[in-house]
Length: 487
Image (tube, rainbow, N blue to C red; front, top):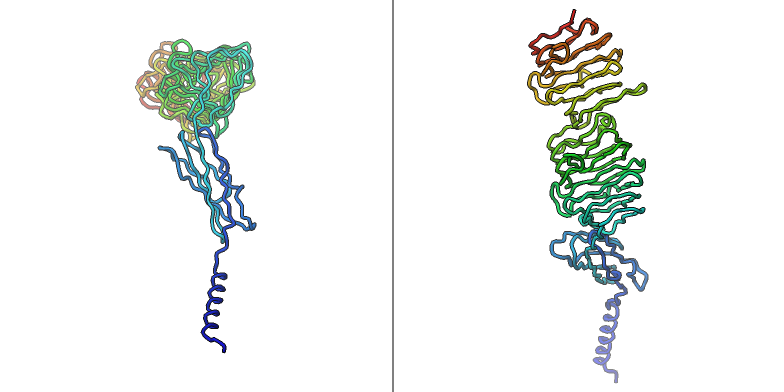
């Protein structure tokens, strides 16, 4: 006879077996692979590579990276976390651990990779460079030096410095690029600047860079010169960089001159800039730049000179602007409104032009002298006037401007000139402006002549000015009189 209870029991077993089979989770087919362990330098970009990860059933999966361990003090971060490759920059020495998680409907898999970061040791530079030398970027971290200078380095061959190189100088040492073979080519990039700095941070730690080479290959670009000025590079002049010697030349573009105990840059008579663009001067003890008047025309309006220097002015030594029959020597105004400052007498033998917005300051008792074959063309606008004044606003602070020019280009318009007449400039007369000599001439219009120690304008009997000079201009605070025409 058929047993119904047995049938029911067997059916239950089959049902239970069938249910278990249908609900069973499939085995995980994923295998994460975070790549091999790495040994790197701090400051170098590390690539984490998860492309070795797989799914045995060829299903797609997602990636997730995380930094699970960093040295104390590190703030390193992943560039991205959800791609098969991620990067980060170790910023402290020690051990970093990254974990990769891959996942899909089948589940997830994890793997870890160890990255050991260390600091490379700098190389020592301790002798003259007499053969062509290339300094490579050895240390990726821009805060660490690639090379250390222990004593003065004289260069009499071609020296090439690659982008990203940092050279640290011991106390009072300098780099000197000499003529008769010395060449400096130091071209960094915006993201890999070349650094010239002290072994220790601090204004005036090392001496600076001297350029005496006349090679037209000399150039620096995207570089930083900081903490120099411990000792004079010439005479009593301290600077981060000094361009010295007749014929020496260089191109300077995107250079930072900062924290130097002296001037940022000094260039003497007979030197030249083949290029000068977008340079920055800040926190230098003296002025940003000290140079000869002939070199002023090379300065570009986009360079920044007013970043907390001891005197935020372009200082110009006793100089002459030499004669030229083809071009004017143009002094531009700067976007940051930096004034020019004469700290020595200026003699103009050729064509000199001041553009609208230019300011020229003159130190105590100094003179601007325009010779007969030269001229000064200073034409501002109503909105952008030209200013010629004393360093101090004191009445009769500087000696004044005297012109013997016979050129029809000799003209002032929308110029504010003040503070001249500290001492007689000609014929016993004190004045802001003296027009003197046979056929000397100067047109002055829409200008302000003030605060003289004597006359506003003095004109001798052989010279001439525009007939409406007294009505078209503004005169103020000239104790000797506004205008004197000698009979």
